[in-house]
Amino acid sequence: MNMQKNWYISFCLAGISLLPYMTTLGRSIHRPIDYGLPAIKVRWLGNTHYEELRSTHLEKDALFSTYDAVHFKKNQLPAGSISFRSAPHKMVSTKILKEQIEQLIAEVRKHKKRYTHFITLQDKNFNRKQAYGFLVVRFKKFPFVVKLFIETPHSFVHPDSKGFEPIFFFYMGGGINRHLLGFTRIKNLAHINKKLKENENWASLIKTPRKWFWLPEDPNWIEIEGENVDDEGKAYTVIPGTYAIIADAITSNQSFSIKNAKHRKKALKLCNYLDLYVDPHIDNFMIEEGTGKIALIDTEHFPSLVGFKEKKFISSYFDWYMKLMYKCAENLFFCSKESAKKTHRKKSELALPREQ
Image (tube, rainbow, N blue to C red; front, side):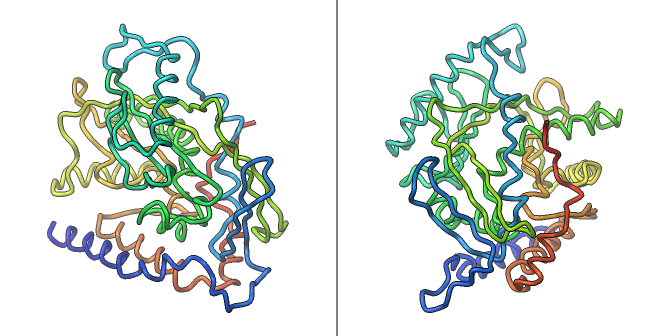
């Protein structure tokens, strides 16, 4: 166990040591612009001013395939009422939930640290001063969690403005960010649930939360244009600049621990069965109060997050950390323009399908 813990610390220290290089996203002003590099131009829909980023790390699938408008619309928070997970006889009007989230956004834009209807659960990837990034909160009166995603054209091309982790995601995942990854959470959840149903043992052990997308009255649409991102050259998409995911809050009486050998073994066995479509991070698993089943919390598409395009098997957490370190180093130090093109052309066998 000490070895596992030491390697986790080593991974973190390695990341910190790479930070000076990783945060240098821009090119020197004295260096001529290479117009053959993959590039994106990002602006508010209908606006003429755009933010631009050129990098060998930009990939078409990461930037232009994660948002699926048909899927997003099908999975929006319904009108009417929704039941509580732990007490199905109790209901809440979705109109109330929407009104409180709208107020949350207003308070976020006023740079408030505390919110009227919510308790903050996570804000490490959120820039409070600029009011953008990824914020996780829980309703004070209702058993639901809100994952709020806010992006601007400027923040989209500056992953270093939203904390430490987004820099890793950018380099490892082809320019991916939390905002784009959020679009994969419900589609990947459906894939996970389908896979679990195919195995009676896992189906009897695992529970997942319900999730819905939500759009504010003014989602501030963002337009993204791509150049040199694949053999076709051009790419285009429009995504909501602000949206949220509403999910069941899971009440737990025991979290998984990296110090517990049974927990580590169970988590890795499940992740391998799911072809690493879920993040093996030990905090992603807990025992649900009342059912005694393992609750799987985070369902963003892990292969998209770290840029895996082939199935992998993880034998231990040591093995997992090594694979991540290797992938990060490979992308940072050995990603020439030609090798990047070869990587970008490679189709992922782990990609989530688009809905028709």
